[in-house]
Amino acid sequence: MKSLLASTCLAFGLLAGAAAGQAAECGTVTIATMNWQSAEVLSSVDEMILTEGYGCEVEMTTGDTVPTITAMAEKGQPDIAPEAWIDALPDIVKKGVDQRKIVIAATALPDGGINGWWIPKYIADAHPDIKTIRDALQHPDLFPDPEDPARGAVYTGPQGWGAAGITAQFYKAYDAEKAGFTLVDPGSAAGLDGAIAKAYEQKKGWLGFYWSPTALLGKYEMVKLDWGVPFDAAAWKCITVPECPDPKPSAWPVDHVVTLISIKFSETADPAVLDYLNTRGWSNDTVGKLMAWMTDNQATGKEGARHFLKENAAIWEKWVSPEAAGKIKAAL
Image 1 (cartoon, rainbow, N blue to C red):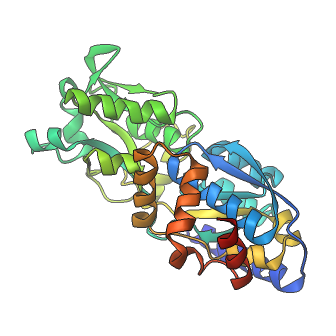
Image 2: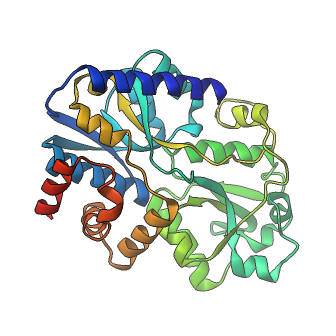
């Protein structure tokens, strides 16, 4: 992580140098929208601000953590990944920065991303002895696999998420298979949310990966299990590499969640656009409340972005130039 942060400092310098050294129209920009709620709405906020405030022609592309970050680091496309959870792919991000394919701009979530294995609070209350992952793995009967109730289930993130590979490595590190558990792929983000919702409606046990900030954890009270061990840098490096053959337990550190920009875009974009992308970020509380509103109103990312911009000018006006702020308000 130290080497990645050093590369980050270099990236900031490159970004600042590009902004200071030239002026250009925004032109066409491609933005990756990920398939989870906070990333979806942030990409829509960026789309509206860049379109209405800075005159960009925005093209949205569908992405996921692993393929999007890998494509940016290797090919410099798409131009922007608004919410990149880079700790899932530290070597790839560092390589992309070192080879001048990408730069790291604003910290999208200054509070950081909180990942973990969670259980419903009613299970934690009924079984106060379950505090850690190893505690939970002693009770496969409390977390039944829907396909094979004789075994327990550990739900992972859908394939394509960095968390999917990491959770699979944790599954190995904690010997979950020997403990009688099956690793379950929910198939999609909606499938993962649906599994938690169904467990809550039926007051059954559920164990698996989830993260914060999310609207779902605001609706369904869950308890994050302790890893039972401190963070271990060497163990974590193995956990982040799916091919690493013998992962060992480690705490999952708070994730750095940043905005990635392609070098090509940073060298050609309007400096005012780069200033925005190097400034914009929101708290977990802000995005959590927005996601809760979106869930309650069955709103899309675009609808959530418009709601945010209408209701939170005091926050986003600090990200943009006065001229852009005026144009955005007029468009709302």
